[in-house]
Image (cartoon, rainbow, N blue to C red; front, side):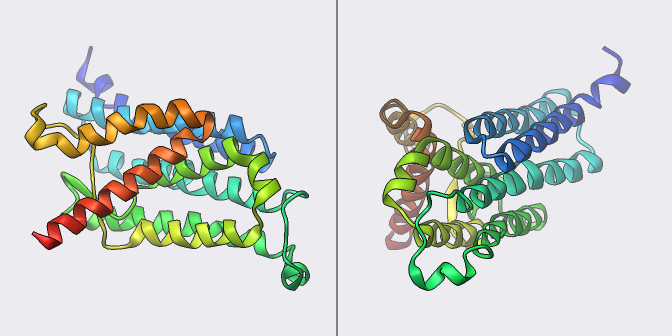
Length: 239
């Protein structure tokens, strides 16, 4: 295949990520949460493969780096924010009496997810420390949490939760995106237990979580990822 063509393959895949994120945003706005989850997962797969093929084909470019961040801002920032926004406008969601006067305005706080995702992406682009691990929650992980959480737990949330719970989660996860908390990556340099025991432990627990919680299983996996990252960081500090 001519070099002039191969160098554009990673950017094409990034554009598919962006396209998937745009469709996910529309599905989220229309309250079709399961479809939105599906397109966010598809965007995450394209996000993985654009980097994979860039390394495989040695097709790195400044445009590719910028395009990747722009695509991620939509797929993993705007799309999950719209899911939270639409959910906060669900008629069945409980609002405490003291919040009824501002009921129509509170859902807009969901766009903190989009704002802090953009900040996270900007920080990542200029932070030379994030080569083998992450500092702060990666935007795809945050997007997968919100999309899985809402798509898989909609009825449960409408029955047992209220708006305050959702808004507290918005604030917590927005903060996690930009906090100086080291989080491990799933990149394997080798397959030895000694060098990858945290990764293997993470993957082993993921299997029953996905089986038990079904659509909400991805959200459970992201929570497990955050907890394990925090526990790992605590052990490093004690050492």
